[in-house]
Length: 618
Image (cartoon, rainbow, N blue to C red):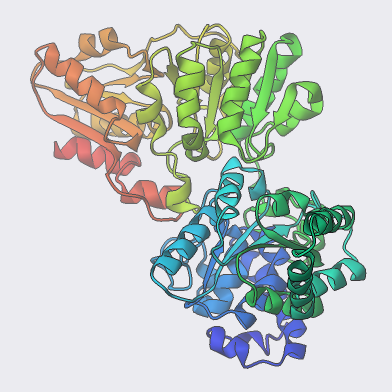
């Protein structure tokens, strides 16, 4: 497709130079551009396709970067990036050295607030608006929340706070699931324009002044207005929270978007504009299966079929999902919980086989944890499947509601360690540090998919909190037929030697084994390699029994060095009287860039070659 208008857009000034009647053509070109550009590289396609018109309308009427547009979960922001001077960089999005897949302050002045986790936009936008007013400035602040982010409690905390004050703030609810709104029609759009228009507002204010002079009349009129609006709009909740509610309007119709947004700009105080969009609009596979097409790898632009490498072993996520469903076939106490990601965490199969025992709580990790605690009190065995990075949001609940009470809840942390293209906001780099420090908690990390299956079986035998962390991506194709239970707190010896000790954790065991084998073959150095398996309780006995005085001790873990298991192992070794070279191969004290997992592991010197070099150099 020829991108006649799109190729002219090098910034928001170029967009504003277009006539309103040209905007539908620009939207059509942008949609085709996104579909074609992301086909060879993948990315968050569905959400971007759904907000093309909304993005254009916002930048057509507002003046970014002076006006601040805050996007919730930056995967909605691909069109925003295009309109703000990043068109040429879009083929590099989420690639090593390329554009970030989310909004990022250091990438553009048009990204006033970074985003990766959901439900943050209203809090951030209200903070900006409050700061603006304290500084006596006059720019506009807009928060665009959607893609399920309103299911997060933080969004309602922000609405509750902002609605109690009179700071000028526009919140746009991008409703792409029709979860609140009725079907959009011309009447609702017409009402939205009338409600935001000056004649309606002026008439309403005049009526208030007149009725205010009559005893009881103003209260009666207000009750009548809210009653009528409650019948024809779903916005009573937002109105009660202090927001002027507008909508719902068609988020793909410029004839509705432009005048409504223009009217919203003229009003003071907090407002919520309800915009209904269709996720994946313009690409039938994404429209028909929005969950799969939320974010995925490369695909065929003609057929919409994702590219898959033939003969790849199952992913850790798939092994987890299949194993948990199998376990539940034989144990009715097992229940599964996910926070808005049944497919991403592998819970979908469990949901098909045991729908009454599967709970998707929405983007509400705090609730997921405490809800699991309640299920445990009721005699169930909850398995909470959440990405490592998102588990951070429920940390207080893990401590207070699970560990203090020693409840048998198992946390299954997918995407532990380096995640790749999603970058710093999604890196699972902290869970070893924050989980191993908790009393009553058992923490495991499998070296391969077979060990993951055994750890799930083991978790069922532990009467208390359990964490199992495992990486993103495929396993190694090993035999996964065994469901044997592991001896709790016992490491596994993979290689034995007298020239030093390497302790490896989970996803780094295979590369550490490769490095140790190469050292033996090429350098004649024979190192012992322990597969730790249990981060907590730590197998101190095995570690100390293989330490050699004056010989090298290395710990390899795919997590942050500060607070990592390497520190505890080093302390135990020193207390035993050992002295010698110590190498801690872990993630440094900074946030990773985005790129493939292999690229990042290479840069961090945590792949097999990096581990080998560090063992040799020390």
